[in-house]
Image 1 (cartoon, rainbow, N blue to C red):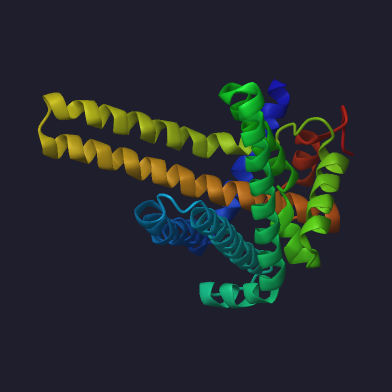
Image 2 (image 1 turned 45 degrees about the vertical axis):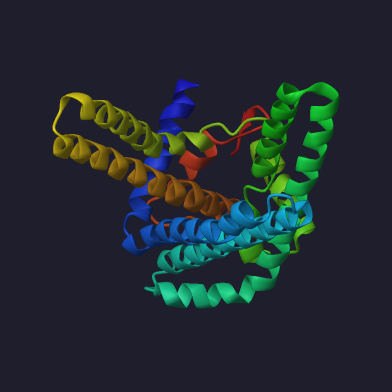
Length: 282
């Protein structure tokens, strides 16, 4: 267990060093957050203000929200992976070029967003039935389990769409097959690469909390500086997590399907930190 931790940590560090070489990648998670916040405001303000008793309208706006935000986040992620792939190939592609190349996959990304929205609506409908029959606690447990399962099952969806231009059902099937064939019942050191940005996220949250309590005993300016520092660390951790998690998946997928490894990433380190059904990939 500890040996896998060390190997996974080293692998995450290698990916981090690789990703940090292309500073333009950090703009994608920032852009994604800004666009989704603006979309949420644009959709939820009329949802709150004008649809108190209009259930059908509220449901329609909610469906539009899911479709729009899932498509936006998927499109920006696709553009980022295109940018990252160009970097791996030794090219210096601009952000606008990467977004332009992502247009090639707009149909598959729209289909994926519709498919994801349909799954969310089905889960929501089942949740309401469970709530009536078994109570709110069982409903919440179901929601968490269903959401987690879908999120794991669709983990490699965007890399698969970029590589094969598959439709949503085939994409999900390929993602699940890839996970089962390469990871079995355990992800080994895969998620350990998540720990590095998590440290910044936790530290940022703690500093923000300290800053809030400091308002009582310290000058407002000092407390504000503490809070801003905490928010900066929190934002950095979230950006880093977005970059590492998504580029790491992309690297793993390309390695296992094409045998391609970027410079600085050790194939043996990947093989030793990811297990297949209780035995190490060789």
